[in-house]
Length: 114
Image 1 (cartoon, helix red, strand yellow):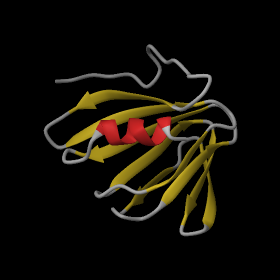
Image 2 (cartoon, rainbow, N blue to C red):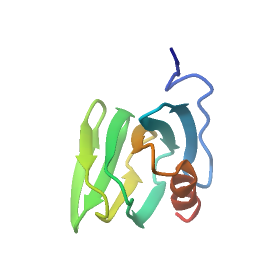
Image 3 (tube, helix red, strand yellow):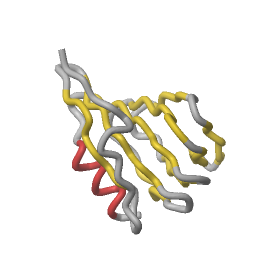
Image 4 (cartoon, rainbow, N blue to C red):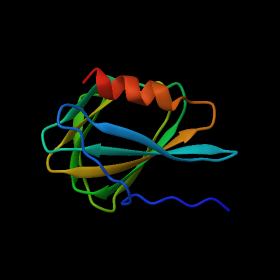
């Protein structure tokens, strides 16, 4: 059994979204993205499907030119190769589930480029 917490050791970064791998399993990688109000992750895409859960806050989630307001408790799935972007409307905690084949380093690169 593996355990992790979306709240323990939570740190926000003043200049960019803070990305941390919480759990690496045989089938997925669970990532926490802590975003301060106003922080963005510019348009990007992943080669694999993802699942996004907003644990805390409000995020504007852009997909194909449409912006969707994602609120605490909301979840969404997105197929691979679909451009998307995020903007924190308030301090937010995002849980991102990645395919085992995907890379947490890719997500960190997106956050650093924001």
